[in-house]
Length: 325
Ligand code: F6P
Image (tube, rainbow, N blue to C red; front, side, top):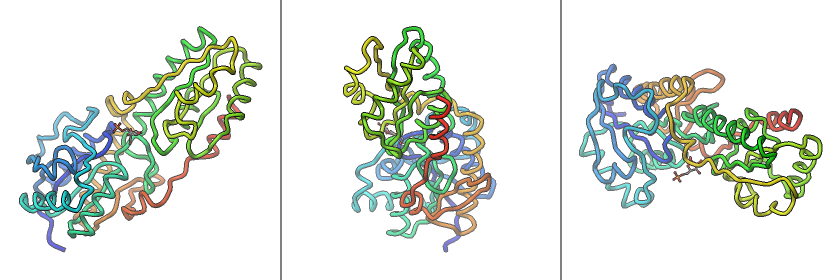
């Protein structure tokens, strides 16, 4: 493999708190190993549009604690076509890029794998998504911050729900995975948690909530993952609207607030570890792998496995939620 002298770093897909910490760590690991670094703005779209910027040690000062991503992000449709990827590679060549650090989720890694398979450009991935739905790392960058943001929001909803003895359906993010719903549900004492990984029939949902009201005669909180089979909190509310008599129902969709904010210390440390591990992996000749942390140890997982293998939720937590509700 050609000696790596210059790398590109970018963020792509939905942003996640801690992406900046990962950029900082990659850039500084690279520069301290004598590499030069280009940042690509707006992910794959920026690669196509030739939106490259030189990065140095000081380009990443004072960003560790900031949410969002200084390199911006995008979901590029154009990059999905062979023509789009060709343009991106022409620009990578123009800037003498020898290897790439790709920070994002499964869409980002699918694109990165294509760059390697079609053009032989070494790529290493850093898992950055609040959804935590990537195989090969116990946690993704941004997940812990999103959990804490959602938990604080739901605690506030609990106050008002309790004041009015209401039933609240709270929708949290997670297009295809229920990690956020499961852990925020436990952390906020939700009476019911609905996830795509554990489909519940409408009758079960109805009976469980009626039982809760009968026993407790107070507020009830259901945490629903965006990707749940019920179709999310608004759809579920429509289906349950005539079922709870005097108990009024309200819906709250937390939405993109879960993606913002300053990363927790956990996410900052994780991002710092993984951003650096990705550059080290490239320098050690690895490609088409994702840097992760499994059981507290740094790992490298073949990129295709990060989406082809399914990371399971912890079903014991779901059982626990039933016992302690
Ligand atoms: O992938 C992270 C995520 O926040 C999902 O939970 C959510 O479904 C999606 O991104 C929303 O994407 P967008 O910001 O493009 O609407």
